[in-house]
Length: 246
Image (cartoon, rainbow, N blue to C red; front, side, top):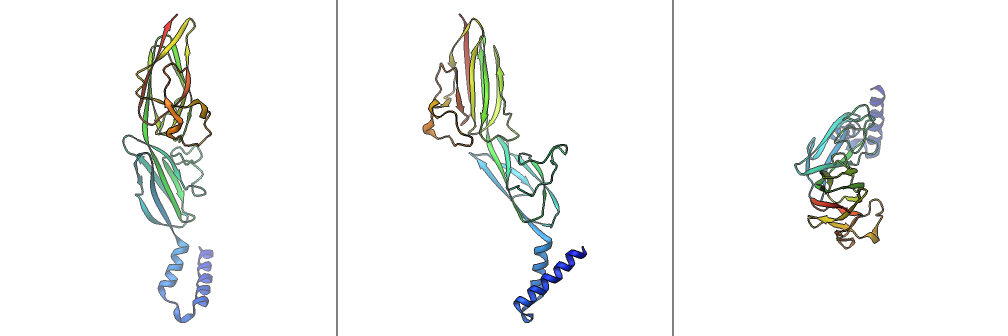
């Protein structure tokens, strides 16, 4: 505290000498003191293709004491998912506000911000997309990779959907899901049905570089006999993979 007071005195003298004693008033000194002891936290909300949500403290600018710790929370609206915080470099506490046993991350919906400086944060939300796969007959659909926004609220499911079962998983709008189809021994894949206008990435563009945006010209209708490919989560998708014994 003594060090801070000394610093205020020195900076005040510098201000006085630079603008002239006759021009110094109380508001000048108060503004100088505030700039050293108060910091501004500005919270913004971003969206990916219609995603939405709320933040606490609310959207806008807020004043806090220098080095004060502030808990900031993002809550997605129904039908949306929280993706991440932007602008957190160098301002988060070391430990996660969600799970203190883990390090803090931009993917935490709740973060502990240390006001060492003026901070501007953006909470990014995405529209949620559902992928439902039905497996009809002796075979398996494998979800091999998910590429896209990749935040904490989506299931980010990879794995097998097996014979005569169904699975529904949530992904971010615009994510790309790579799949393969495997028939059981002695069986064969007979094709996709109920594909709900699913689009796949044209194989000539695969593999997609990480972070590459997908344009409409890169997509083609899902091949009904495709045993592998990458589908685009631009809407809720439902499909049935059909298998039969030879």
